[in-house]
Length: 295
Image (cartoon, rainbow, N blue to C red; front, top):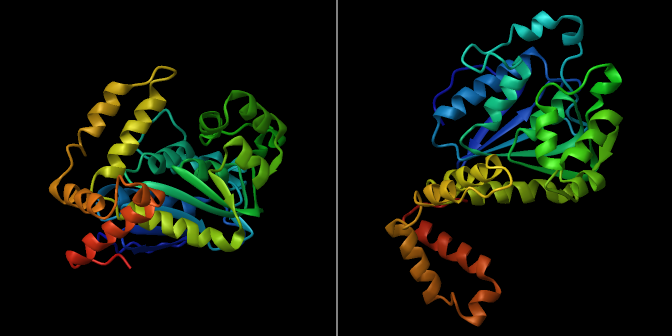
């Protein structure tokens, strides 16, 4: 990780095997306030420049609150929020939108690992990640802004619509209700709900597997997927082809791995039963041969 002398006051940041874990730690309820916004902004700037970070996992030190919401004091003192405006970001966006978009546009794969309650600005931050995994029956999401006399303004209406669709977004926004993991998973608000004692292991394994992919694969895949979303109802196959050309024809080390896969049973009935396991074993063997262990 790029040398960083910045002293985080509301985050804990660690990096291991290309996975950066960013832990919100802002007692008592992980409010998104000036300290969190500044820390997240600094980390986003760092990650944007650091090619050694492949995956970012955003989580919380407080099992009761992933991130309660944006600081209520910004309702009383809007100027404090506006003072956080980023001069290098789109000036038509408010500072929370700017922050969430900086996080959403990071080149790394981003995962929100969520437990506890996350509302308003807290759930908007989680929605800025590429994926969300939650502790089943221990996680609740909500956009209660209409109960405050406003509506979601940190990206919430836009992120929700992309995940839930228009009708369910209207329901979530105008009801202001709190949603548990069963309904959140059904609606597509989270990727999946996992038993609480399995959440850490699942996300850690997923993050490490993504970080261990050959250079450029994850970034090119995201580029193609994002092009599909931006194209509307018609598929943007031109953008997909351009992104795929960055990883195929494959480099020699990837070709060698696939030769090993075939040699060890790929494209045979026996080998195809657990193709994922075979591919993982071949990849692991290739790393050991090069003297690189991913732990």
